Image 1 (tube, one colour):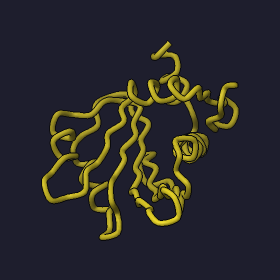
Image 2 (image 1 turned 120 degrees about the vertical axis):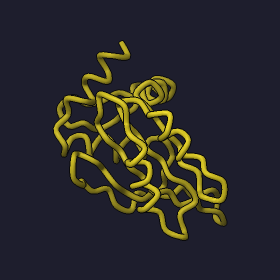
Image 3 (image 1 turned 180 degrees about the vertical axis):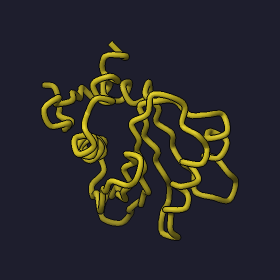
Length: 144
């Protein structure tokens, strides 16, 4: 089941993968997605925030990539380069896996952490939250 769901996501055309990323982040409680845009090599870049009550808000830099192999550390560095002083955390979403170096680079003392969501983690989150993927649009929806 894991492989079939990852295969569905990997087959999505770029604009549908963009839809997937946007709706995935919305369904995991992002209250505001400021921008999601396509970059080179099928990379999706964006910013989002989660508001907790009326006082607190956390800002995130987002990067996503359809990938069948191992994500190199240079892409984690690319996400870090997209983070500004107001960013609390980064999130990198991929359908592949992360290299050991990428995992190390995601947690550097003194810098905002980067959460890494690989293919297995992505499918786990989809299942845990009863989320499905529309093959026609790439959008994520609740399976009720």
